[in-house]
Length: 53
Image (cartoon, rainbow, N blue to C red; front, top):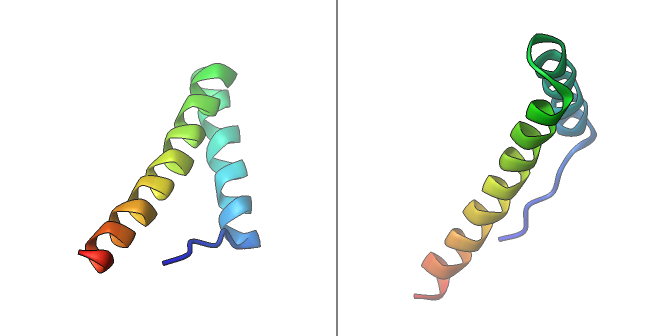
């Protein structure tokens, strides 16, 4: 399975980051966005393992 980020998803992440940065701090916002991206990679990898098992 291949995960592809769409332009809309990228825009959503930018909005999420801006909102969190405004409510908390830029470093917290970056951490949240990176966690979302990392989680999507983990999900993609898990699906690959399930399909090959």
